[in-house]
Length: 244
Image (cartoon, rainbow, N blue to C red; front, side, top):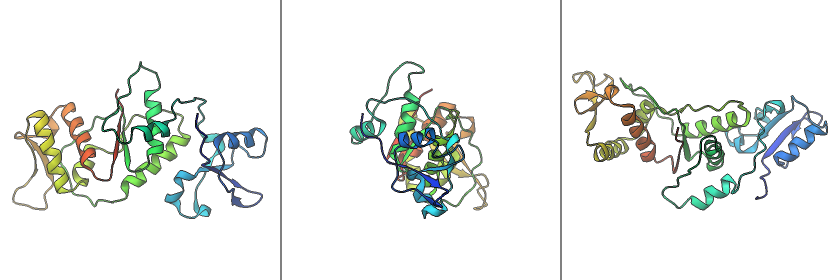
């Protein structure tokens, strides 16, 4: 077991400030059992701090809402991630309910916003695509939201926030060409973006797959395109895929 990180702080109402330096989670739990902090004491994992700027502006999570699971990993997720970072592919194999998804979520929490976690519920519809303004930092916001939910959620959500339509309209043209070319090599189908009205450049797009709208394609085809789209997106250097 590695030494746990000092990444927790809490708001001390008596002193009207966030406690520094950060402490480990076990120390935070000990303070609660000793009656030095309460159920309603606001707590923050400092990994979420960059999004909020100064400590005084950080919203906290009530201590009573923090998730707590007494499980020891061997190796620790951050150690495993560091050991495999130079490997192109890593596969975890084990029985159902063996903790694979749980381990992957912990690993993602350590990987940072340059990673993306593809959860089990990967099915997504895709039909007419409208243009949208791409926020270059939306992946950072997505990771911070994951961390916030991961710290307090009491349910195991399998939904993906990044849908295929968002991927198709969010990546750059050259990345989309690479995505479609790779899909053609793997599946044998030809993909291209076509306007719904060829005579109106402001009309929305569809993805044409061998003469048909991609909405009629199989869920497996859409899943493959989703993963390929994330792989070509240069904002992500680590892709963590969970299997159902």
